[in-house]
Image (cartoon, rainbow, N blue to C red):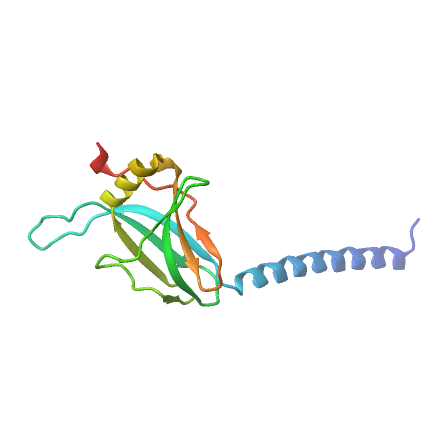
Length: 157
C-alpha cells in the first residue's frame, strides 16, 4: 500500500507538469501574436456609381494585420505561376491605398488593379488564373502570399 506522502507528491508532480506544459503553450502563443502577421486575400470588385452604373471589373488584393505589432507594406503584385514573373502594380487605381502604408494591429488595406490587365498578363505569359497568386511585400523584406488564387474575371467569358 502506497504511503500518503508518495501519492501526494505524485499528484503535485503531475499537476505541476501539466501547469508547465500549459504555460509553455501560452508563452508560444503570445510570442507568435506579439509580432506582425499579415493575411492576404483576393476578390473580384467593382465600383458602384450614384447613377446606378458600375465600373469595369477590378481585381482586389487586401492585406490585414492580425498580429499585435505594426508593419509597413511597401509593394504588392500577382505571382504568375510558381516560377513565372510577377505582375507588379506601380500605379495604383483610385480607391487603392497609397504605398508605402503602415498597417497597425487590426488594420487592413485594399489594392486594386483593372481585371483587363490581369487577363492580358495571363495571355502574355500563358498562365492560368488558378496559378496566379497575389502577394504583398513588407518593409521587413518578407513577402506574404494569399492562400487563394486569382478568381477568373468575368470579362474572359
